[in-house]
Image 1 (cartoon, rainbow, N blue to C red):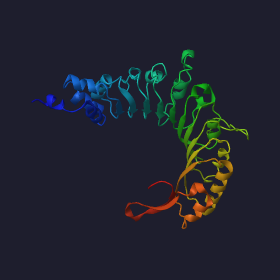
Image 2: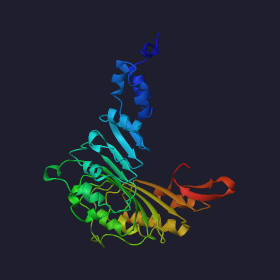
Image 3: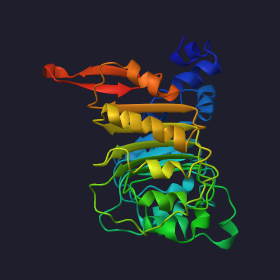
Image 4: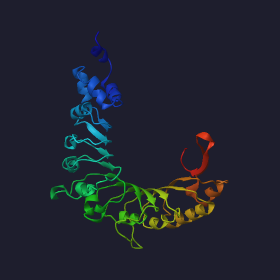
Length: 326
């Protein structure tokens, strides 16, 4: 009995599950062509592709599975990569520079199913990346629902013009921004429901504008805020922003070196500014509270806090007040 016939005893579902764990390049070079049944099953697999090197083998695999690829992570320059052939692409992560042709392919008429777009860093030559992607649609493309999740290293210039093209984005993630940029983000005309940011005050204040939110301004859609505070004044930059988020239900805060006084102030600010908050999560490193029940008594939102000792090799350790399992 040959190898192909032995494989026939397994159901299609088993192969589909198996193939989901095998790198695409191996699927192409090892499994393609064994028999017509396996070829048919291979054509039903959703493919995720990590491009960590520019090789002919990768190119052949990409071309073969082009209509099945739903995720691509581009780690290295890949000038021969034709993004326009991946019409079913759902998620694109870019850690390197794209060609102008590749940038031009990132548009709703070419990648109509793209929902997640992730750029890790801006490029050294300052290519107007987001002007190319977001601000050059034709009028026929304007009303096409498109990217729902967008991750960028900082707040780009296009946020101040033609913001209608951002209106369909539900989740925004920024690697690092100045606290003053938060007003710009919250003032965008969008359906933004989830926001994840790292606020960094020690970086130069290159915020695009000194946008000031009216005192009674309310963001009507944001329900989930995840914020990491790398600021010298700990949590003080966050508190004024909370007053503009009447629909906020989930809040995560990460910060370092809080004192008992900081927790008392946090409890007061949360109860005053977002009394409707349902869930609160945190990770406060370099923070030690001897009697954790003191925190539990400050606010019902603090009831899941624990003070944990985190040990590293060499005997080094630190304490962390957190709601996470670490």
